[in-house]
Length: 216
Image (cartoon, rainbow, N blue to C red; front, side, top):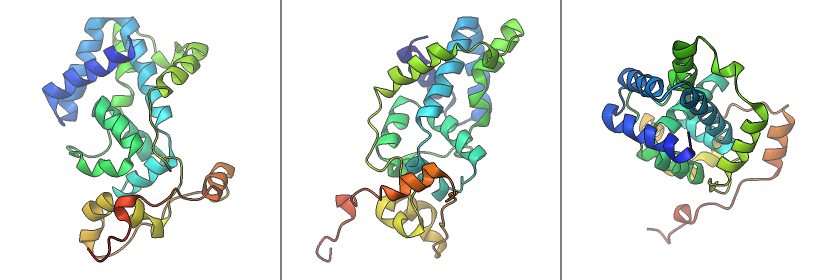
């Protein structure tokens, strides 16, 4: 399965099923089983590669505004984002604030999507896709898929509460402003060397659209 074939399959299923996750999974697994075991394994590997490539603190910050703060919920969020299709995935890695434009459907998480390829392969062969991923080939695929992604500035910055309104104004307006109170606090482990390093780099320049417009 090529990356284009992957996204075409996602587009086909989403066009037919919309945000109905149960219907989505039924059709996706059926199509993978029709395509065969090799396609099911490839789909599994590509999903996990795109999930790994979306493991960015800036995107995690954005998902926290929608109530998805834990490690597990961020995995399920990334699965959901991939299930929304190529345009949504690439757009939101460039500008996580554009998540505000997406229809949540059943919610901004889709745990079963992560396991679609594995489930299809197991039904076809009785084997687990997790046991048959070629790690060397997987790492090469990660690099090839990464080359297509235009990450936005600050995509790997772990934002804190006081920075949210400047960098995620639409998400804040949609999910927090209406509540009448500012409750975002961040969920970072400040003993983690990666978090420390990411915070030390500092936030990116504030988006021009959020700068003072002379009283407008």
